[in-house]
Image (cartoon, rainbow, N blue to C red; front, top):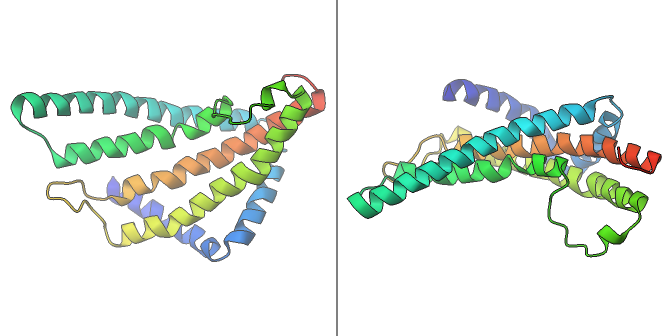
Amino acid sequence: MAELYGKFLNFLIELLNPLTDHIDKAIFFAVIIAIVMALIPKIDFISDKLSKFFMVISGISLIVLTLLVSYDVITRKLFSGGSIALQELEWHLYDIVFLFGIAYTLSKDKHVRVDIFYDKFPFKLQKGINLFALVFFVIPLSTLIILEAVPFVQMSLMQNEGSGDPGGLPDRWIIKSAMIWAFLAVYIQAVGEIRKNFYMLLKGGEK
C-alpha cells in the first residue's frame, strides 16, 4: 500500500515540480484559476463535501490519538514500558488532526479573527473583506505551502526517510505529504467560499 501511494505521490510531485521554479507566476495563475473555478455551479457544495471528508479523517485521528496517548501513559507509569514508534505515531496523528481540520474550519467560518471591528461592519462589507482575504491571502498562501512542500516531500521520498531513532517509524514522507493534501483541500474550500461570499454580496443577505 505504501509503495503504491509512493508511486502516485511521485507522479504528483513530478507534475508540480516545474511550478516550484516559478512560484510567483504559479501563485498568480492559481488565483486566476480559483476565480474561474468559483464560477462553476455547485463548486461550493463539492468543496464542502471534500472538507467534511477530511474532517472525518481528522476526527478519527483524534479519537485514535486519545486512545494511544492514554495507553502510552498507562504503560509508562504502571509497567515502565513504552515505544518510540508509538510516540512518533502520536505526533503523526496530531499533525493529521490539525492539518485536515483547516479546510472544514474555513467552511464553517470558525477560524479565529483578531479584528475586533469585523462583527460591527455591515453585511456587505464583511463579505467584501472575506472575498479580499480569500483571493489575496488564502489562495496564495495555500498555493505557496503546496509548492514549498513538494521538494520537501520529494527529498524525503527519494531518501526513503525514516525515523532517526531505533525502533521508530519508517516512511516519514507519508506524513510529510499530508501538507500537500491538507492545503489542496484548503485551496478547493477557498474556491467554494469565494463563490458563497460573492453571491451573498450580490444578494445583500445570507445565503
